Image (cartoon, rainbow, N blue to C red; front, top):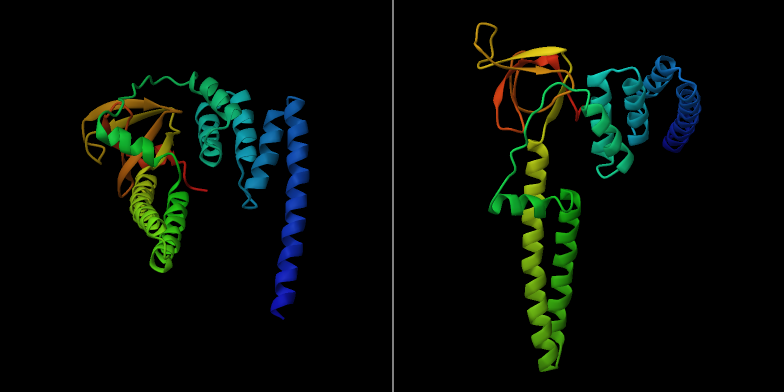
Length: 252
């Protein structure tokens, strides 16, 4: 009975994929013909089925860009980048989309030891750091066995040195894995969707205005209280915004 259930799931999944692929191709045809609104409707119908891909988000962003929808185009380009961080086409198009935004926010670069640690951590995702640490631990065990059972003094010496080295690097890789996971959890980007949003000093309407933001600006979410969200900009400024004025990027 269980096997039949899995077969049914596979057939349904295959049919759904084929149907979405057909819709995707029709949407691409509409886009190429200049029917951006209809193409957008087709692309979003694929999203409604629960399918997500960098290509789908990229095409949705392109359609929004053609329709001069600032916030949605940047939002979907950013989502595509989350799935394909180094894609040249996405990076190129998002640069054009960001030229439509009003807010010019400086980026304060990190300096010192923390910058070096973060740069090293980002060379791999935390899953790969964890896998590397496991491989190095296995290597340590193998080399230690070689050291323990070897009769040659030179081989014992080399095995001992390399086994300790692999164990040390394994702990280092594990530390990078934890740091990478921590940074990933801390990274909560969002895009401002309100045409103009008042950023407050405190999470209430009576609070003084700290500054204004406009649609398409990217922010970092650092806290949430009721229907208010505390955000941080790349220049270090912080404030509270009504939660409905922004959309989180990591919500798939």
